[in-house]
Length: 468
Image (cartoon, rainbow, N blue to C red; front, side, top):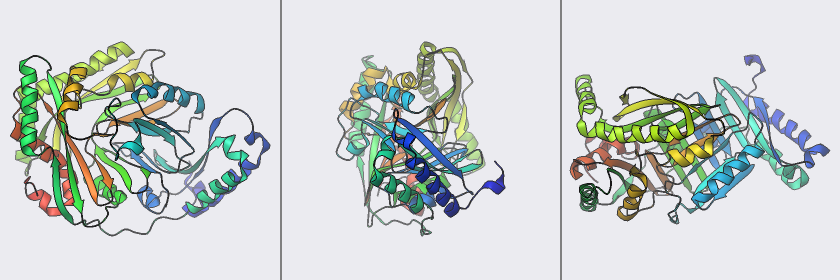
């Protein structure tokens, strides 16, 4: 794209509104089978989070991949599919295949960790799975920025009032939000679910299950609620996380005002380009060191730890088994260290080629949940998680991402939070295996919590992992 063809945000919004208005007036747009049409204009590089902050829309979305090569910010919904149970995923994705033949259209969304478990009131607006196409989208991909509107035809062209609202919404997308001050919330109190004693009991129950050979690994999670003196602006939290967590997926989904799911996950579920597939095993954790020497020592401990190697092997072996049923070829590299802001992990990249006919519905059904967030064997681990965790994970540890005409990418939504006005619920989890010790696992949760604590508690988060 020639840089001279790029327009300012205001110019692009005006041009886009005129093009959409003309299209909606055409008689052929009000007839024919249902389809999603993307209309876009090139635009100069624009801060997508600032753009979202300026939009008073009930539905807002943000996604960035780990390399920051693809970034999407969206408002509203031209099309949405909302599932209330895990069994609705396959027909939902089949509908996506039928509707979205345009190579530029991408469908965004996510799923619950456990679609068979009833959703709590806080998670109900997210559904068991939910996928949608934003009405207006600001997208940056490979250095090219576009402002786009998606039309659900012929429906959007049949009602003049609907058409007028769509055009007005595009014109309203012409300005950035006001510059927000530095995000400095006042945390009044912190509540952990479970508390340390209940956590120790849950770890003990897992160890008993291992002794009975009822399971080999169970991933236990914790919900940490931070109550603040004022409502937390979820987009400001997202911006702070993005600055402090490089090499991570960043995402934000607001299904209704006052409620948002925000995260900074290092873990890829899969990336698909045609039939070419990339996935990975990510399991085993150490904190980062205060000095280079300490950091290297902690990394060596991770690579040499029998417990961490066993936990990691559970994940990589399970993924390989799943892929052999869906793929013609599976290649795995040796484990290596993945170093993040506050943690370092063992990571094994895996590449594969899908069999003809295998697609995203198969991958989401069979890969999720991986042993990195569920356990081994899968069903036995899920039974234990349902019995031992005193809260609803919701979309935490579920897949979140997008599907396009010939590509898709999903992250595993770890290192995530549910933001509800004056409460930020942060979720962290650990794989429990034979030899795990409750206190050590608790401290590992604190390391994984550090990215959020550094935002919510500032310098206090850097001084130690004590509870407040």
